[in-house]
Length: 167
Image (cartoon, rainbow, N blue to C red; front, side, top):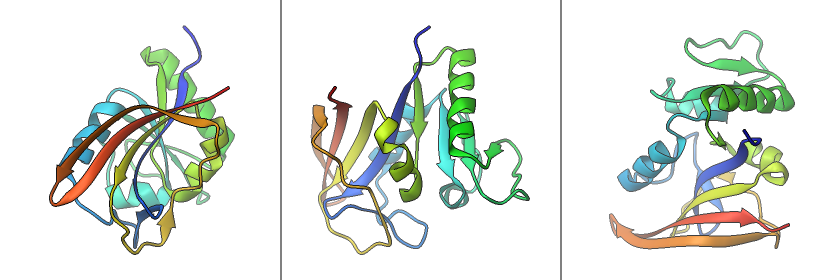
């Protein structure tokens, strides 16, 4: 089996905001379904604050939580202190489970940390500009949108995009 692809999955406003007060600045059922479909059966790397905002392991996924706190040991997830160890553990899980993607689900620090290593980005663009304290890092010109689906939900324009890194 080939090495699994490293994928970022994110919902981001036009102004780059992805969160406020450790929560999403919107409630979009279609984006939650999209997240579930994209991550199901795959290892998901996330930061402790993002894990705290979700509050529990989600069924059908193996959470690898990155935390500097050696006392942080919630049940049902793997906790590691080192970004390279998180990636290695997620790769091992993906290979064992026979899946071709590892998902990075935030927050902002993890997106910044793994952006250069990522192969794909599953991005939900929310056409709004909410206040927020967490932003998605700026993308370089080495990313291309390879698919895009626009629709409206709850008065907001939403766009599911798949971005691939250009070599």
